[in-house]
Image (tube, rainbow, N blue to C red; front, side, top):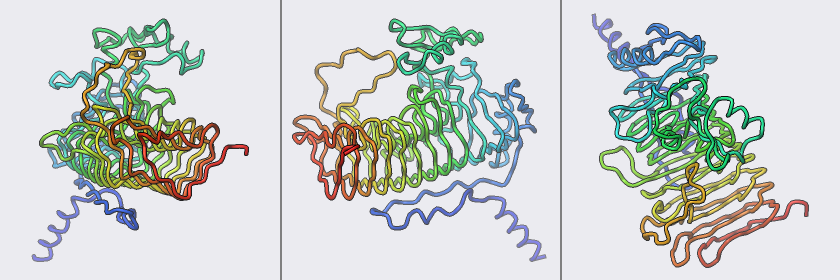
Amino acid sequence: MKRIFFLGLLLATMAVTVNAGNYSDYYTNLPVAVAQPKLPTIAQNTVNIIDCGGVGDGVTLNTVAFDKAVDALAKKGGGRLVVPFGVWLTGPIQLKSGIELRVERNAIVYFSPDKSLYPDKKGKSSRVKACISASGCHDIAITGEGIIDGNGDQWRPVKRGKVSDVEWKRFHAMGGVERQNGGLWYPWDMKAGWPNIGSSPEQQEAMRNDLVRFSNCERILVKGVTFQNSPRFHVHPVNSADIVIDGITVRCPWNAQNGDAIDLGDCHRALVVNSTVDVGDDGLCMKSGRAKPDVPANGCEDILIEGNTVYHAHGGFVIGSESVSGMKRIVVRRCRFAGTDTGLRFKSGIGRGGKTEDIYISDIVMSDIAQQAIVFQCDYENKPAGSEGKKRPESVKLEMVPEFQDIHISNVVCRGAATAISAHGIKGLNCVHGITVANSTFVYTKAARDIDPATARLALSNVKMSREGE
């Protein structure tokens, strides 16, 4: 009788498992102590989307089937929602605590071009629902070897100067309207017949949201999946804690407006490893806004980024433009950037800035960097599509001033940047100081340094710079 009791107890214990492997090896030999994230716990219940009426024929809308599957698992205390072979057309998917979305190989979750599916009638945000979201949840995961496609062409504006004639004609074949004397295209009055949801092309553009957005969540795992073609940012945890992002691929057109890959916005205890990025905006990006009450995290703290590859992006690793609540204990190492606009990018501006502390970046290789290998910019302005040419207010309140300091960069090898190192602060303010660059080599095509000594203080040690071809 006792044996039966203990066997039952063992089976009950096994009913809940921790996803993924052991990540403790990444936390050895760090230049600063970084707290390790806790992994999510997922119950061993399984629901297949087919069991809830799902049809993966690329035609049938599966929004209701996903809702049913999530609700069924939630009633069981969580578990794995399996998406098998097929193309699964759907509207927004909202996950709940204890649920893992498992997208199998040769499965594509494809988000519908029907914009009327996405407005959040209960929400206060001006943006529509993210394609995949969770809010105030714990123990959630997206795993597998499949593809999650945001169908972002239906949402994003397109700048004429960033596309070929062939591409420009393709966009017009979808419908849409031009602005700025033909310099900008908006997906409006599309020929497929899907309704507009905004009062104007510009207002509708401002409504587009992320492919994956987790807000105020704890214990998140994102592993193995390909995320592509988002309406806006791709993978975006916000005010969340205990995050592991492992071995994902993020891709979209190089000219996709706001096509950030992995954005950690006010996150604590995050690990980003073994991932590949090729996108239209920032690659691996840290953001921090104004502090919020009653959320798991404000500011970016205890973040380790290792072993990732970034092809096209505005920046390989980026801090900013928002850094209001601060950045602490961030380690970036053993990454490679090939073909990014900038390599290590630190950008902010008055009204968006905060303080950085204990930032260590090492063992980075770069090639074919279009602009700067390392850049500090303190007059950055966010310019949504269509805002070009608008004047900045002459008087700006001196609050939330950026302070890039205590940043240590070493063992960088870069071949082919236009400028090796660029740094500009703000006159009369202490915005860029306490920056070290050591034991690094840069091959540049235009300039070795573009550093304003009056506003930016960098200490370079054993840094070699040579012009390409000399």
